[in-house]
Length: 181
Image (tube, rainbow, N blue to C red; front, side, top):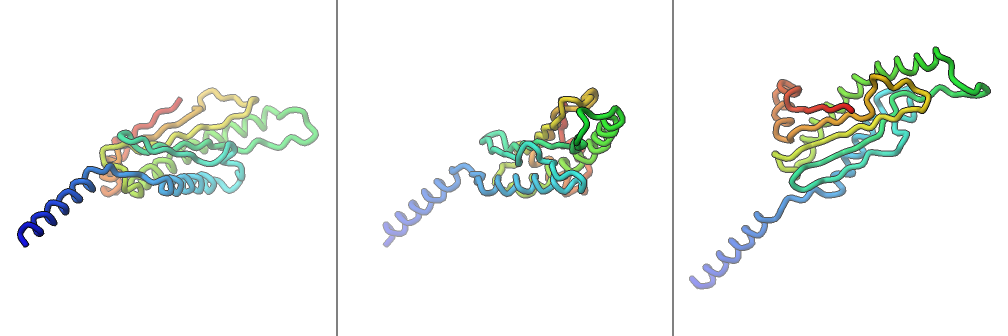
């Protein structure tokens, strides 16, 4: 009887050790759910732009040992429609640029919120790994792109993002690293 109890204890300990040594897996389904969430956030930023995701839906990958990386291409402003005119007027181009400049801060604010929400939703991602959202901004060939970034990358360590979120946003600026190119 003692031998059976000892064998059972050893087997239970071996099973526990095997489970503990397994690396946490971030499922493709969870990542796909976050992709759809990012798409929805972008689509609902501005009511007058049905083509926010002009280049397709968000994509993501989990890199073991690094974290979760999301990318999305965003069209801040839909191009004015050219019907029987060969090109846009200077006023239309200036209005287009002004609208883009106005929307950049709105986009950044929503992506900051998404980053912290994703940190809270991606339970399998270890606390010391990164959550990253890279936003690629589409442009038209005729646009004046001076002063406009082509990409905005927001990233933060999951643990620091969660701490800032639970503190009501205090320390969020320090937790999120933003790079614009």
